[in-house]
Amino acid sequence: MSTHERFLDQVCELLALLPGTTVLSSRFTDASAQIEVRVDDATTLDSLQHEVAAANLRLDPWLRPSAMKTAVFPLHCSVTASHAPIEGLTFGYLQILGIHLVWRLHRLGLLTTAQANPRLRAWNAACVCDWPAVADPE
Image (cartoon, rainbow, N blue to C red; front, side):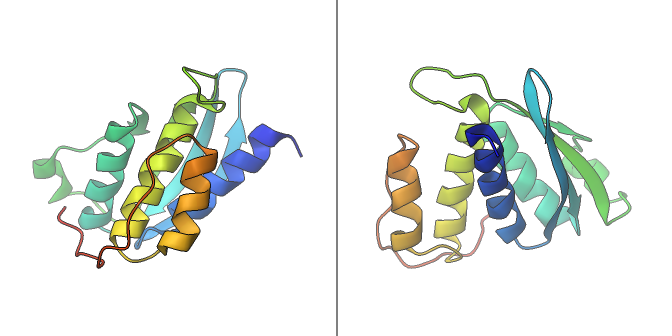
């Protein structure tokens, strides 16, 4: 297994920790990684869209808040992320997604500081502190 495949597996593991999200599959193409996920409800979709947008990635389908009210769940979505290196990030935008997921999962209390910070250091990202977990504002 290549380092890129191992990294994709790590990101998929993090995605699977988001409440209401199930990773169905993942694969690499020459230019990007694709992750297929099942989203159980509108709250989960809103959270996933937030993380994907923060990492400058593509999510299909992308639903406006008004469309979420009439969407049929569970919904299958596809996240597409370039894995080409950028500015000190070995795994490019896929790495940015992983970083944002670690921050979110830590904030929700689903990753401890001891679990989050080694990944964040290895991924050249800002570490987290031992703050109490908060409810997801989205």
